[in-house]
Length: 336
Ligand code: UD1
Image (tube, rainbow, N blue to C red; front, side):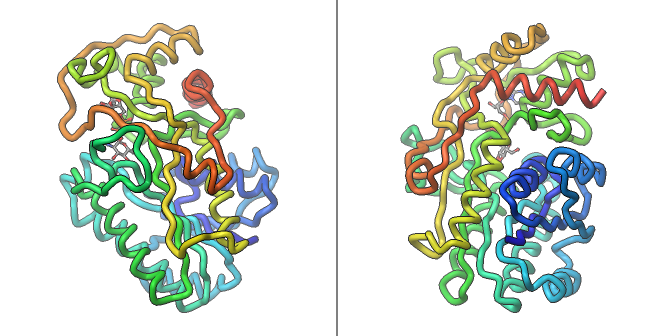
């Protein structure tokens, strides 16, 4: 199958491009390289032996997107990753987030409708649940008011897709990611944060390698066993594989509804201190860290109920936390 991967030179997109090619699919990548690098294409080629077709443009540009789809109307499925994703930045620049994340989705759906492309997998986030009342969190838990414009773009995007499937032939699957970390086992592709990382894992590896002085652990007064916040960390390669399963499910007409939602996590929660311990254990590195105050907007604890994804998609995350933290470290070292 020919699959369009938007944001395919980014962190999750590049790992997914590799898994798609490993499964025999043809990949076309569109990316504006606003937060990624051309070199990633070399990495994908090195791992899978195939260089994906690539076009550099901004999907929030309606004319360029329409033109792209006219030239590529043989695409069978789309996995849409391309989006801005920094929570803090979205609070500073809400219009930039709405323009980029929402316009690009609308342009893609228009291109799909005009060219009879029916299958869309959308990159969503567990952030839509806020702090859930019940854990583990199922797909039926209520969506709560977003804490940031970034989070709101994920909620609005899901609604746009769910509305669109009602009046077109388009079908959608929203994948709600928990916390993707780690890198490909080859250490040829991985997460490439520009500037100071916001997320825990790249901050840990950059601290261990000496790029940062110490990690700030945001809060140790949460209602959790060690007081630090709990997340469901998932290996990015496990996550990438779920996208292959999802797009194949759509193309092979296995969907039960025209818009489906799946949680992608491992079902296990780890505290910040447990992630640090895992990193120290798996790499043999000692990590400098200090406990500081809570980060505004953080939830206390969240982990996924994975039963629906496991049973309905027939997919299960396989890699454990030590494999995640070690692969992140191997990637950091390879960047030197
Ligand atoms: C964050 C976003 C989420 C988004 C995801 C994608 C927030 C509130 N949530 O998830 O909406 O989908 O990124 O990138 O920003 N931590 C530290 N020190 C650090 C960094 C993080 O202690 O320097 C802690 C955090 O407080 C949190 C955990 O590590 O408890 C994970 O943080 P992070 O990696 O930023 O992910 P989330 O906040 O869960």
